[in-house]
Length: 434
Image 1 (cartoon, rainbow, N blue to C red):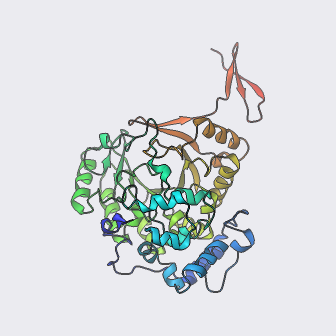
Image 2 (cartoon, rainbow, N blue to C red):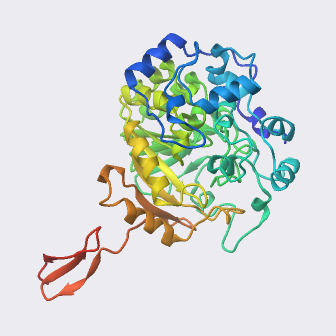
Image 3 (spheres, one colour):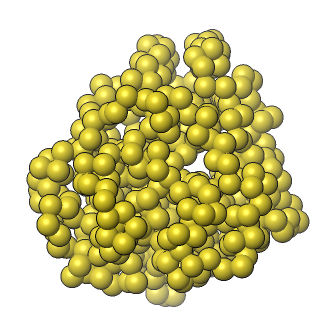
């Protein structure tokens, strides 16, 4: 695959000519891990608990699987490079040959990777690839980043822009759908591409101009729309940009009087936690109130490295919320989702949204019945803390916005009493005169 996105990211770690940035100090990393008391992941193929908590030599804490992966495929890469987010970005795995070196590919995977440029580009950081199973083609994380020929099957109701974002875009890269909120797409680059991406029509293809002129037009639109009080900065992944570029974008938005707070949508703490450097956190904390929506989908992403990244963000005063997509064969059972939300809370990330997978073209193999999402919410509500229960929503096709879904806990009425069902199936009365 060509990896079109390499030329489309002139500001962040994707640019091979960019001056080297701040490499995470190993001493600082070790202190942060000790102070943060990282999550010891529950037993899985990826993270044996005993291995996840040990430090191997001078390495920062990592999963056993990551340490084995490094020793096998990157034996000559020192810690200072492995822990440098720009090195990780420049060394993403993007071609069939690169992926075949580290994974035993199925025929369907190899066929999809051989179709150069025919779909959403393939890109995975070495770190995140270390979490992917080498030989288990059904491993959840592997399904989400390695292409398959299933992506070429177009199901009913699917579309390249199922949410109708382009229809609500008054200027390129800005979506204004809700009265008081705007979505600003600052880049079309990600360090790793999710195969179910809602914006696969644009990300990684160089479709968004990266110069300041486009962003200035978006800033001008926001300045002229005083109802906008909340701007979500997304993409692509905004944290694929360098600190200075991010600082400039945030400063421009913060200078608009009616913009009360800013949000950043990112998957970096999951796919490239090395990006969350002390310098980045110092840059972000200048622009409070600033919130962050992080995309976690599976407990295997909740590694010690991810824990350290989220701890740095939380310590910088940034409230963290997770936006999880419900995916068939990845996280579509109560036990997996419960492990995920519990890990997130330990990382100081509030489970915020559980999204029904959007009907993006070629996503049928990822989508579950809506009944499955309701089953998961019912399996969480009352069985764990309310903080761990996300809002289950469908982002309505055609631009309808997010519509919340809940199991039906209202059984009916009996005179002036409302009949309610609790999480154990018991029926209770609540006085509610008509």
